[in-house]
Image 1 (tube, rainbow, N blue to C red):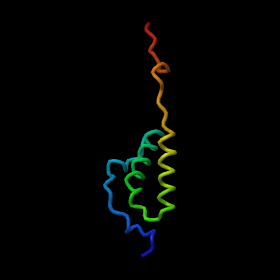
Image 2: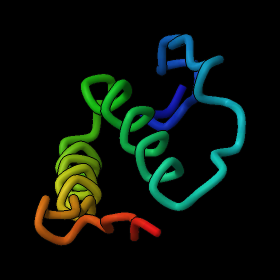
Image 3: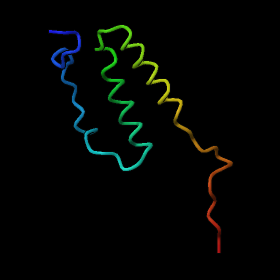
Image 4: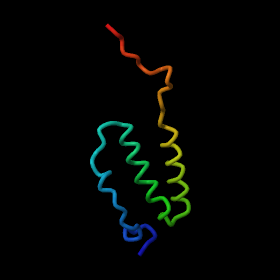
Length: 76
């Protein structure tokens, strides 16, 4: 059994995450959540560091709209 066998990874219930997301933000959230759930089970130290680096990059990719920039509906 090599260090990369799928048998080494415990079964983690992700059924709520298996449907393909409808937009890019949802896709990043699903990817982040799945990797976050698995990162502690990665035995290869370099691969785990890479996964953590990826998690940080995905987290930084989320942007929120500042309150002042929100679209205000035009009253007619």
